[in-house]
Length: 91
Image 1: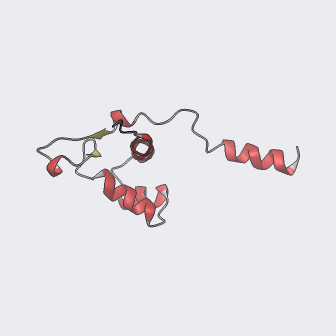
Image 2 (image 1 turned 180 degrees about the vertical axis):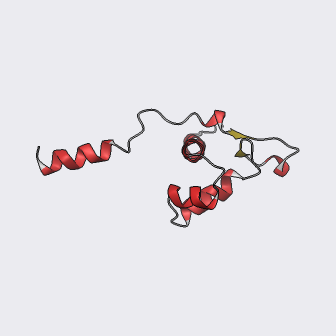
């Protein structure tokens, strides 16, 4: 195996073939956090967790800071942000 092929094989280990199903993990309720999107079953706003990522924290750092979260919930918040970024308003 060439070093390039090995590097590519190593990268595939972290590749998610399908996006996380964010709708299973992120909810919004006007009675909780004034309707801000939050991680289901918690009062942790998605924006807070995304802010940690923007500040350079890794998913492992975030999981250490919020031990009640799961890796799936962390992936879901990224998929949620991706979907928001792809949203197109038709005028």
